[in-house]
Amino acid sequence: MSWQGIAGLPPEKETELIEKLAKRIVDAGLGTMAVMALQSVGPLSFAAAQVGLVAGSPILMTLDMMGVKVYEYAGLFAESSRSKVNTERLITRIEELTKVAEEEQKRKKEARDEGPQQGWLKKLRDFFT
Image (cartoon, rainbow, N blue to C red; front, top):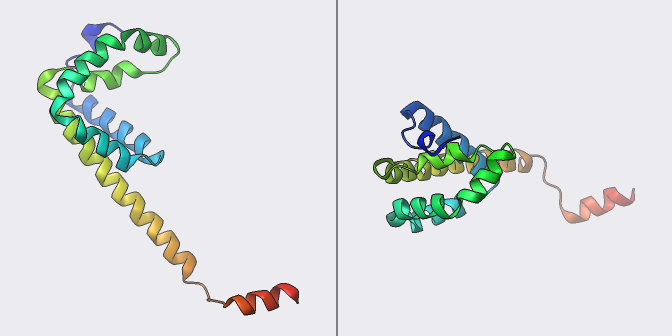
């Protein structure tokens, strides 16, 4: 993919990529850490994106040859006018998905804990009988 293909993604493609990236981050259990990292570099997001694209271009090209679609994600942050907006959208979506995942985990734990409670002595007695 050429560098011209990075900038100027259509809004629906941006939304799709943000959703996909946020899901991958949350599924890996890195939601809170990713939000913290993105918020800490938020004021410098455009400059960091530009430096990353220039300095990381050999790595990006190598990954592209290996079949990893990194240029799609790089396009989210390539344009100065969209960089900060997309960073905020990504943070918001990660926070939403993290909250949903935490609620789901809490429900599973409550469902597991709703069973009959047994004391340790009864468990021990049942074990030996």
